[in-house]
Image 1 (cartoon, rainbow, N blue to C red):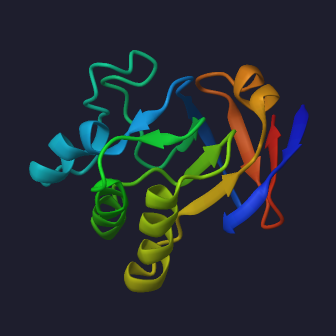
Image 2 (spheres, one colour; image 1 turned 90 degrees about the vertical axis):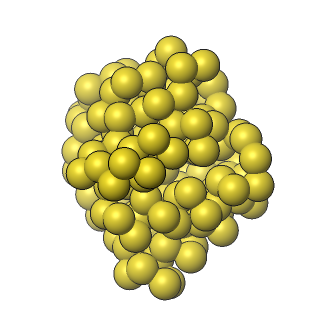
Length: 146
């Protein structure tokens, strides 16, 4: 068991499975196909991200350094949250980028989404957490790898 403490962007308590990307996650490339198909789950469609490509990320903790890509990023996150096919949590090792922050906050305010976001968990978090690990997230920004 190992604990990491980050900065709470959108808090909550949650326990579930981790999906890990060691590179930046392109939100449009990752979520677009599932959103356009009105899918019931998101299977990451960014072929340039081998860590998560074709993995189901709905309802899981997406562990990542940062999101990358175009200015549509925030809207894409808000859209998948409105469809209820989003990751349960976005756990950033670095500072959250403004586009991801805006999408997550809008999803919380406009969509009543319970999506969680914690940033500044550090490089050690991203090198420690593994695909399929069970994580426990606390309202105060503590992430425990069980």
